[in-house]
Length: 87
Ligand SMILES: [Zn+2]
Ligand SMILES: [Zn+2]
Image (cartoon, rainbow, N blue to C red; front, side):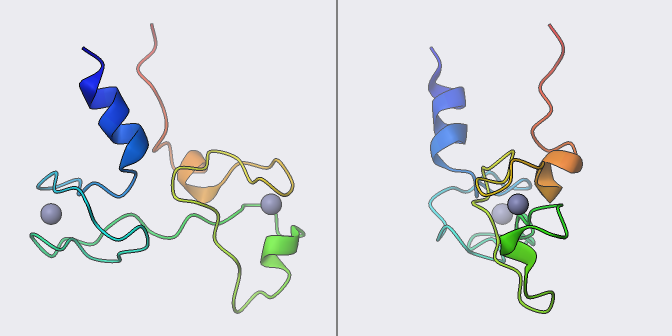
């Protein structure tokens, strides 16, 4: 019970294709099948301190729905990756 939800919370980098977990938090490709992992999770607010340097923005954590610095949605949130099935 609750095992899947728990593992999702603890493994934001689980491969969407093969489900392999245990990647480095910032892995770009799956270590098991080579599929590209989630892109970096940037803040959508152009004026955020994280995006101060446009060529080298600071990513939020991959499981962050909102930027911890400005509260704007992250790109993964905007992309619908955190959308939950409506009850
Ligand atoms: Zn994989
Ligand atoms: Zn921000």
